[in-house]
Image (tube, rainbow, N blue to C red; front, side, top):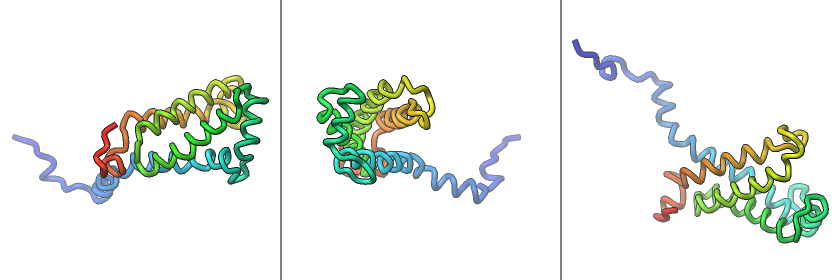
Length: 155
């Protein structure tokens, strides 16, 4: 007696729907991560969304965080967050962008370690989570729904 359950039991409608939607899971994470990082870069670079702009952020980096030259570090952080986030959204140069974000979050971890774990206390929770998301995106690349794939870019 052989058992071939796939031909005897039709796929449940919900399972079929989830199977069809599953390929959207990873792009949803990649795009959302990019969209959520971009405003942080815009705060640093342009002063948008209640941010202080490049000069004031640079002064904060230098005086409060001890990151000299503050302007340069603020510029780099803003560029990585804004344009790296945009690259994740588009899936363009996805791996280099994700690597830059992971490195940035590694630096952020060193700044926030003294504050403990929870982000509400300025701890490592937020940069740790975003750093791990960036590493996951780095490992997978742009994949199916990306400009990298569309343009044949292999990184």
